[in-house]
Image (cartoon, rainbow, N blue to C red; front, side, top):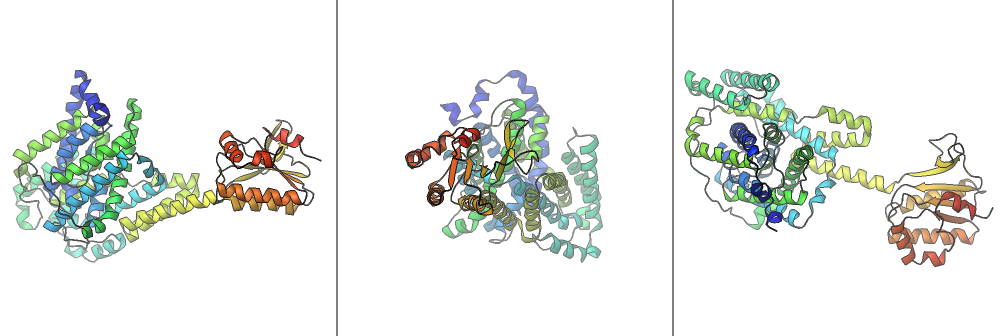
Length: 554
């Protein structure tokens, strides 16, 4: 019972000492990676950098106890950080006390939404966001995130806008105002990050550029020459915080809270599932929602901001040897020690290096290969990706994903309302019935049309099926029977039954027949309850097309 409530107890009670080395190594490496990343992502979210460190402590401990993934590295991520800025900056000035208070409330709301979804076992609702929407949104958001850091990379003032074209236009207008020392730090940091990732992937590149740029600013007094630095970072543990809330704030934050709750979970569960498959254990979507929900509630309670599992950090955590949630606990403890004793080391850290870390981190989220793949395999899925991508780039994060989801649902409804129906003919050499459009050797039966319906039947598509049946009778007056192959139909609703009932009665009155074959058990049950087996006796019992043909009057 306790293991169901606290999934982390499973690895705690059965901990193997041979896993300790890998967990220690992974915990240390992820901490080294997360410290500069957490500060950078907090800055991206419009928050003081130290809040990124706060969000990297207690939430990690909570997830290790309640989450079902053993290698997922929870904490601040770029995508969620941008969503936080997008949703809250319209309500308060980024960095202000009111802004921070709203972010704490947002973290609580995200946590409660995820917790509620998990407890009600509604993890499946996230599956309604198609992969094409997520891929298009992620790629566009990565570009928005990267370009949002131009002001820190170039040392210029740029307005906050989610339209990247407006941002680039403003940036080009200020090329003469670029601060050379800031640009030098930013560009060299990007080069070092990319080079180390490619040729020395085991070296903690974020830590290297932080040390390099901080020493450069300190030794050359670049902060006195216009280079923007972090400045004083408060030391000590995060204090307990209780977000102030009212109905107006909750109403205003609800759309972005729902977006973060779902996007954060989808991103987190995707990487957790990949790692769990490799390690041959299961992650449970509802338990993951509970673990992430409680982590976000704790982030709100301990002065943090919304967190989720990160792709890159989880991959690093797993690659560094993490075997259990102890790796995350070690990461959290090391960051707590940093908060207690080492925050003064960050004073001279330039904002440009944090911008460089963000830019390099999100570059990997831009997935051109997936767009090409979807356009090649299924053009409508590729179109969904491109529409989401373009909407996010031009209209903003929230609007972009909303348009993507709505478009994908429209595509789904269109597909459902236009089911595939194949007219079958007899292929003599194989003694089977196949689609006459795909098999030139398939011969249609004289005076009989055989239609295979490849979809459940319900109110949205029954009219199309009705029209196809009517068309078969009208296009060839010699056809006296339509056989409906129901081998693929696994469900029907009452509206579909009413429509077909009326159709059967109408054609029966003029000497035309509609016969069914290979009806599945669940559909048979529905038709029995509708009284069809008494009303249309002899037209429903056939188990194959040949059997249906044998009972037709020539």
